[in-house]
Length: 275
Image (cartoon, rainbow, N blue to C red; front, side):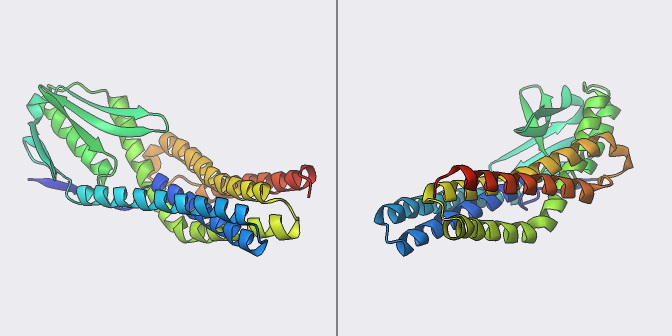
Protein backbone atom coordinates (compact mmCIF):
# COMPACT_ATOMS: atom_id res chain seq x y z
CA UNK A 1 0.00 0.00 0.00
CA UNK A 2 1.30 3.43 -0.99
CA UNK A 3 1.21 6.49 1.23
CA UNK A 4 1.49 9.88 -0.45
CA UNK A 5 2.76 13.00 1.30
CA UNK A 6 2.44 16.30 -0.55
CA UNK A 7 4.43 19.46 0.17
CA UNK A 8 2.77 22.45 1.81
CA UNK A 9 2.84 25.71 -0.14
CA UNK A 10 1.71 27.86 2.78
CA UNK A 11 4.00 30.57 4.11
CA UNK A 12 6.48 29.24 6.65
CA UNK A 13 7.01 31.02 9.95
CA UNK A 14 10.13 32.94 8.89
CA UNK A 15 8.40 33.99 5.66
CA UNK A 16 5.53 35.53 7.62
CA UNK A 17 8.01 37.41 9.82
CA UNK A 18 9.85 38.66 6.73
CA UNK A 19 6.51 39.82 5.31
CA UNK A 20 5.77 41.79 8.49
CA UNK A 21 9.20 43.42 8.31
CA UNK A 22 8.98 44.36 4.63
CA UNK A 23 5.49 45.78 5.06
CA UNK A 24 6.58 47.83 8.08
CA UNK A 25 9.67 49.18 6.33
CA UNK A 26 7.65 50.09 3.25
CA UNK A 27 5.05 52.00 5.25
CA UNK A 28 7.69 53.81 7.32
CA UNK A 29 9.66 54.88 4.24
CA UNK A 30 6.47 55.93 2.45
CA UNK A 31 5.27 58.00 5.41
CA UNK A 32 8.67 59.68 5.83
CA UNK A 33 8.68 60.53 2.12
CA UNK A 34 5.20 62.07 2.49
CA UNK A 35 6.40 63.99 5.55
CA UNK A 36 9.28 65.33 3.46
CA UNK A 37 6.76 66.75 1.01
CA UNK A 38 4.80 68.28 3.89
CA UNK A 39 8.00 69.89 5.24
CA UNK A 40 8.92 71.13 1.75
CA UNK A 41 12.25 69.29 1.99
CA UNK A 42 13.31 68.04 -1.42
CA UNK A 43 16.34 66.24 0.02
CA UNK A 44 14.29 64.34 2.59
CA UNK A 45 11.60 63.46 0.09
CA UNK A 46 14.07 62.15 -2.50
CA UNK A 47 16.01 60.11 0.10
CA UNK A 48 12.99 58.35 1.58
CA UNK A 49 11.27 58.01 -1.80
CA UNK A 50 14.32 56.08 -3.04
CA UNK A 51 14.21 53.90 0.08
CA UNK A 52 10.50 53.27 -0.51
CA UNK A 53 11.20 52.15 -4.08
CA UNK A 54 14.11 49.96 -2.94
CA UNK A 55 11.97 48.20 -0.33
CA UNK A 56 9.14 47.75 -2.84
CA UNK A 57 11.46 46.26 -5.47
CA UNK A 58 13.01 43.97 -2.86
CA UNK A 59 9.56 42.75 -1.85
CA UNK A 60 8.58 42.30 -5.50
CA UNK A 61 11.73 40.26 -6.22
CA UNK A 62 11.22 38.05 -3.16
CA UNK A 63 7.57 37.61 -4.12
CA UNK A 64 8.52 36.41 -7.60
CA UNK A 65 11.08 34.01 -6.15
CA UNK A 66 8.46 32.66 -3.72
CA UNK A 67 5.98 32.22 -6.57
CA UNK A 68 8.53 30.14 -8.48
CA UNK A 69 9.24 28.02 -5.41
CA UNK A 70 5.51 27.61 -4.77
CA UNK A 71 5.03 26.01 -8.17
CA UNK A 72 7.87 23.60 -7.46
CA UNK A 73 6.60 22.76 -3.98
CA UNK A 74 3.09 22.13 -5.30
CA UNK A 75 4.46 19.39 -7.56
CA UNK A 76 6.82 17.80 -5.00
CA UNK A 77 5.47 14.55 -3.58
CA UNK A 78 6.88 11.80 -1.35
CA UNK A 79 5.54 8.31 -2.06
CA UNK A 80 6.14 5.64 0.59
CA UNK A 81 5.41 2.17 -0.82
CA UNK A 82 6.06 -1.27 0.61
CA UNK A 83 9.53 -1.65 -0.91
CA UNK A 84 10.79 1.85 -1.79
CA UNK A 85 10.63 5.59 -1.25
CA UNK A 86 10.01 7.87 -4.22
CA UNK A 87 10.40 11.64 -4.29
CA UNK A 88 8.80 13.21 -7.32
CA UNK A 89 9.52 16.86 -8.13
CA UNK A 90 9.03 18.91 -11.32
CA UNK A 91 12.59 18.38 -12.57
CA UNK A 92 13.59 15.07 -11.02
CA UNK A 93 12.25 11.75 -9.80
CA UNK A 94 14.30 9.82 -7.25
CA UNK A 95 13.32 6.30 -6.22
CA UNK A 96 15.32 4.20 -3.79
CA UNK A 97 14.61 0.77 -2.32
CA UNK A 98 14.74 0.59 1.46
CA UNK A 99 17.41 -2.11 1.26
CA UNK A 100 19.71 0.30 -0.60
CA UNK A 101 19.51 3.03 2.05
CA UNK A 102 22.80 3.40 3.89
CA UNK A 103 21.86 6.20 6.28
CA UNK A 104 18.78 8.04 7.51
CA UNK A 105 19.34 11.01 9.79
CA UNK A 106 18.15 14.45 10.82
CA UNK A 107 20.39 17.44 10.05
CA UNK A 108 20.10 20.74 11.86
CA UNK A 109 22.07 23.94 11.24
CA UNK A 110 21.00 26.29 14.08
CA UNK A 111 18.89 29.24 12.85
CA UNK A 112 19.37 28.22 9.21
CA UNK A 113 18.36 24.73 8.08
CA UNK A 114 16.50 21.67 9.33
CA UNK A 115 15.89 18.64 7.14
CA UNK A 116 16.12 14.89 6.92
CA UNK A 117 18.60 13.15 4.65
CA UNK A 118 18.63 9.67 3.20
CA UNK A 119 21.92 8.49 1.73
CA UNK A 120 22.18 5.62 -0.71
CA UNK A 121 24.91 4.48 -3.11
CA UNK A 122 25.36 7.21 -5.69
CA UNK A 123 23.20 9.90 -4.16
CA UNK A 124 21.04 11.32 -1.43
CA UNK A 125 17.41 12.30 -0.91
CA UNK A 126 16.26 15.27 1.18
CA UNK A 127 13.17 15.08 3.41
CA UNK A 128 11.77 18.58 3.88
CA UNK A 129 9.88 19.70 6.97
CA UNK A 130 7.46 21.30 4.53
CA UNK A 131 5.99 17.88 3.79
CA UNK A 132 2.40 17.71 4.99
CA UNK A 133 2.14 15.39 8.01
CA UNK A 134 5.92 15.26 8.10
CA UNK A 135 5.71 13.47 11.45
CA UNK A 136 3.74 10.64 9.82
CA UNK A 137 6.22 10.51 6.93
CA UNK A 138 9.16 10.15 9.34
CA UNK A 139 7.40 7.40 11.31
CA UNK A 140 6.54 5.48 8.14
CA UNK A 141 10.09 5.72 6.82
CA UNK A 142 11.64 4.73 10.13
CA UNK A 143 9.42 1.65 10.34
CA UNK A 144 10.06 0.49 6.78
CA UNK A 145 13.79 1.20 6.87
CA UNK A 146 14.17 -0.59 10.22
CA UNK A 147 12.39 -3.61 8.76
CA UNK A 148 15.18 -4.06 6.17
CA UNK A 149 17.88 -3.85 8.84
CA UNK A 150 20.43 -2.37 6.45
CA UNK A 151 20.25 1.37 7.11
CA UNK A 152 22.13 3.16 9.86
CA UNK A 153 20.16 5.55 12.03
CA UNK A 154 20.12 6.61 15.66
CA UNK A 155 16.86 6.54 17.58
CA UNK A 156 17.59 9.78 19.44
CA UNK A 157 18.37 11.53 16.14
CA UNK A 158 15.12 10.33 14.55
CA UNK A 159 13.25 11.30 17.73
CA UNK A 160 14.69 14.82 17.34
CA UNK A 161 13.48 14.84 13.72
CA UNK A 162 9.98 13.88 14.85
CA UNK A 163 10.01 16.60 17.53
CA UNK A 164 11.16 19.15 14.94
CA UNK A 165 8.31 18.12 12.62
CA UNK A 166 5.71 18.57 15.36
CA UNK A 167 7.28 21.84 16.53
CA UNK A 168 7.38 23.19 12.98
CA UNK A 169 3.74 22.30 12.36
CA UNK A 170 2.65 23.97 15.61
CA UNK A 171 4.71 27.10 14.89
CA UNK A 172 3.21 27.45 11.42
CA UNK A 173 -0.30 27.08 12.86
CA UNK A 174 0.39 29.73 15.52
CA UNK A 175 1.85 32.22 13.06
CA UNK A 176 -1.02 31.63 10.64
CA UNK A 177 -3.45 32.57 13.44
CA UNK A 178 -1.25 35.55 14.30
CA UNK A 179 -1.14 36.83 10.71
CA UNK A 180 -4.09 39.28 10.83
CA UNK A 181 -2.92 40.72 14.16
CA UNK A 182 0.67 40.92 12.93
CA UNK A 183 -0.36 42.86 9.83
CA UNK A 184 -2.44 45.22 11.98
CA UNK A 185 0.42 45.86 14.42
CA UNK A 186 2.82 46.37 11.52
CA UNK A 187 0.50 48.95 9.95
CA UNK A 188 0.12 50.70 13.29
CA UNK A 189 3.86 50.85 13.96
CA UNK A 190 4.66 51.93 10.42
CA UNK A 191 2.39 54.99 10.71
CA UNK A 192 2.18 55.77 14.44
CA UNK A 193 5.93 55.82 15.15
CA UNK A 194 6.83 58.49 12.56
CA UNK A 195 3.78 60.56 13.57
CA UNK A 196 4.78 60.50 17.24
CA UNK A 197 8.47 61.15 16.59
CA UNK A 198 8.07 63.81 13.90
CA UNK A 199 4.99 65.74 14.94
CA UNK A 200 4.56 65.14 18.69
CA UNK A 201 8.20 65.01 19.76
CA UNK A 202 9.56 67.20 16.96
CA UNK A 203 12.52 64.92 16.27
CA UNK A 204 14.55 65.17 13.05
CA UNK A 205 13.75 62.88 10.16
CA UNK A 206 16.51 60.30 10.56
CA UNK A 207 16.04 59.60 14.31
CA UNK A 208 12.29 59.30 13.69
CA UNK A 209 12.90 56.87 10.83
CA UNK A 210 15.45 54.89 12.88
CA UNK A 211 13.08 54.54 15.84
CA UNK A 212 10.26 53.34 13.60
CA UNK A 213 12.52 50.76 11.92
CA UNK A 214 13.82 49.66 15.34
CA UNK A 215 10.25 49.11 16.53
CA UNK A 216 9.58 46.86 13.53
CA UNK A 217 12.66 44.76 14.31
CA UNK A 218 11.66 44.66 17.98
CA UNK A 219 8.21 43.34 17.05
CA UNK A 220 9.74 40.61 14.87
CA UNK A 221 12.29 39.80 17.58
CA UNK A 222 9.53 39.40 20.17
CA UNK A 223 7.74 36.85 18.01
CA UNK A 224 11.00 35.05 17.19
CA UNK A 225 11.97 34.80 20.86
CA UNK A 226 8.52 33.47 21.81
CA UNK A 227 8.69 30.86 19.04
CA UNK A 228 12.22 29.84 20.05
CA UNK A 229 11.07 29.27 23.63
CA UNK A 230 8.00 27.35 22.48
CA UNK A 231 10.13 25.19 20.16
CA UNK A 232 12.41 24.35 23.08
CA UNK A 233 9.43 23.47 25.27
CA UNK A 234 7.93 21.40 22.45
CA UNK A 235 11.13 19.36 22.05
CA UNK A 236 11.20 18.61 25.77
CA UNK A 237 7.53 17.60 25.84
CA UNK A 238 7.25 15.96 22.41
CA UNK A 239 5.51 12.91 23.83
CA UNK A 240 2.70 15.08 25.16
CA UNK A 241 1.61 16.26 21.72
CA UNK A 242 2.36 19.00 19.20
CA UNK A 243 1.09 21.95 21.27
CA UNK A 244 2.96 22.75 24.48
CA UNK A 245 0.94 24.21 27.30
CA UNK A 246 1.28 27.89 28.15
CA UNK A 247 1.99 29.20 24.66
CA UNK A 248 -0.26 32.22 25.29
CA UNK A 249 1.68 33.03 28.47
CA UNK A 250 5.00 32.84 26.64
CA UNK A 251 3.75 35.15 23.90
CA UNK A 252 2.40 37.52 26.54
CA UNK A 253 5.72 37.66 28.39
CA UNK A 254 7.66 38.22 25.15
CA UNK A 255 5.19 40.95 24.16
CA UNK A 256 5.53 42.70 27.53
CA UNK A 257 9.33 42.67 27.34
CA UNK A 258 9.28 43.97 23.76
CA UNK A 259 6.80 46.72 24.67
CA UNK A 260 8.87 47.84 27.68
CA UNK A 261 11.99 47.99 25.49
CA UNK A 262 10.02 49.89 22.85
CA UNK A 263 8.86 52.54 25.34
CA UNK A 264 12.25 52.77 27.05
CA UNK A 265 14.11 53.29 23.78
CA UNK A 266 11.56 55.87 22.66
CA UNK A 267 11.90 57.85 25.89
CA UNK A 268 15.70 57.62 25.71
CA UNK A 269 15.70 58.76 22.10
CA UNK A 270 13.51 61.75 22.92
CA UNK A 271 15.81 62.67 25.82
CA UNK A 272 19.15 62.52 23.99
CA UNK A 273 18.28 63.74 20.47
CA UNK A 274 18.12 67.53 20.13
CA UNK A 275 14.86 68.85 18.71
